[in-house]
Length: 461
Image 1 (tube, rainbow, N blue to C red):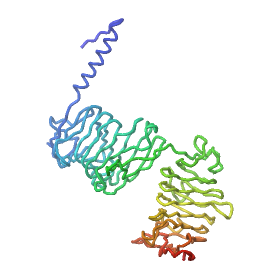
Image 2: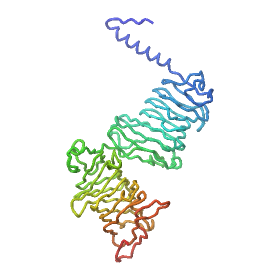
Image 3: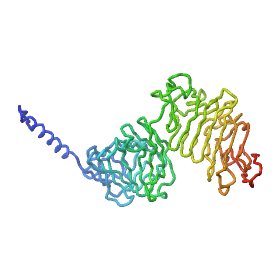
Image 4: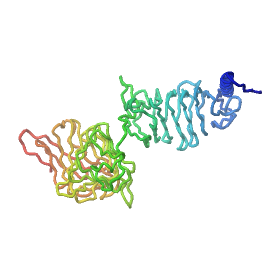
């Protein structure tokens, strides 16, 4: 075919004709490829498993017919305007993501099948671009791990609608918010599943949020009327430690990216640092977090040492999240710092203590109980309370909810004892440093809690 370019006003017409011709040629190359399991080895890469004996390539649409399983074993993209669909009802069209699979649902693509899961070996990839359509009847039912990546545009992500069981097993979740505009909301629905019974109570093996933002993953996000979903909520741009001042103090603005120290309402990320000293009052509010990008413990150090020094007061409010590697009082005066833990928060550390300095630790109970502090590393020196003062405020607690409250769930051992223990007036209890939760899972717990008649003296025995 010969195409001649002409001068003058006809050039624009030729360019339009060329564009139209390219579109036609692209459409001619796209095909719909249908599974027929001719090779009987289940692999997408086997040509004879497809009508016409040609495996799908990018730009094709695919139709899965009823099959026990079809194994995607290479990289394939459902491109704009193309689809992966099925003729099989229910879960009669199992799509297996193998370790060498890399499935991308591109913007403008459609995926509507019965059953998908990673299987046989971990490592499969499933990338979901924004502006696509994704529907399954069932996902998972396997402990094999894939990596599921949601990519956002300025408006949000593609919501994955799953009408039956959704079990992510050991899957890793990545949410790329590089392009997301927070003006469009702080909650993003990732997976809309049918009901509580279809979720099975599993969690992702890991959750990574990229793009300079962080959020909180909620597995039972209520869309209304009992319609539940997995959603990334409370998305925010965090305040990030960079140790720019070199003096370790939170109150020094230049220790933070953009030279702004955290205030209430911020979320904070501690990067790898020998130590940081909280030296003023700061609250992790509901929906906000204190986290570390290097919650690492090794023989040579702790990735993110948070010291609460004299003048420092940390409050973990109901609905707040704290998840760091290492925390300890680092006071330079006898009175120490303060750490208040409200009920209904989330608190996780790897190591606490390793210091003879004191911290004033206060638990505030609600009607149902207290927030349990989880400390994950093993060993007697990984949770130490020497010198610390403990207060438990039970003024709002309903004794009908039990006579035992677990305060600290540690790995297998702890050391030391609180310098002082206090309950609110009108209550008495025992403090057990080796409370057995079953199977040798030990904890610090208040036991034999009793609400006394008005006017009686309180104690912790």
